[in-house]
Image (cartoon, rainbow, N blue to C red; front, side, top):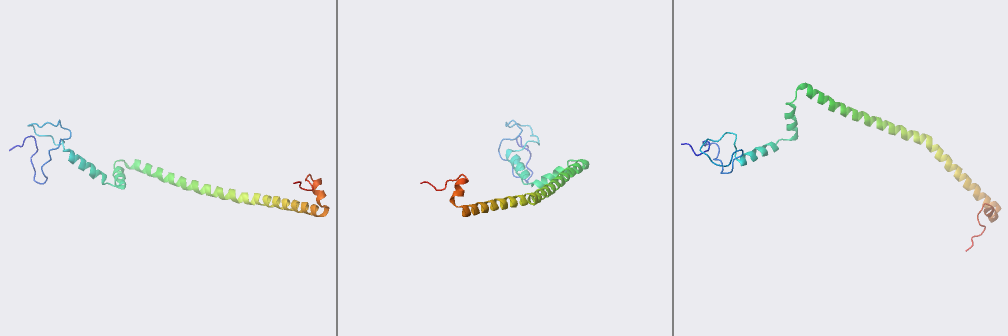
Length: 148
């Protein structure tokens, strides 16, 4: 006995639900349905199965799609990029070290000397004020007494 428009029940699977069929017109006919048509629920289940794959599994599966020379070239490109990044980092570190040590060696004595000269000038100015009194301060352009 042929059921109206449905594939025979094989016993392992429950009978299909009465959902509309994917790829069909939705109308029931007396012709046997094609094997490509699946209930929407089965299509959704198939998509859920795809999501269970990890990214690593997907990449591994993609590797089988490309010939060995393409995979080797891609591997070499990634490896070369990584090595270039490491080399650039080492060079930048060396450059920063050279710039820092050169700056310390060249500029630190200059900064120390300027500070020493500034301290000596301040000491000389204090000695002048002590020896000559307030008149030396007015000669330097400063008022002798602060007017309130």
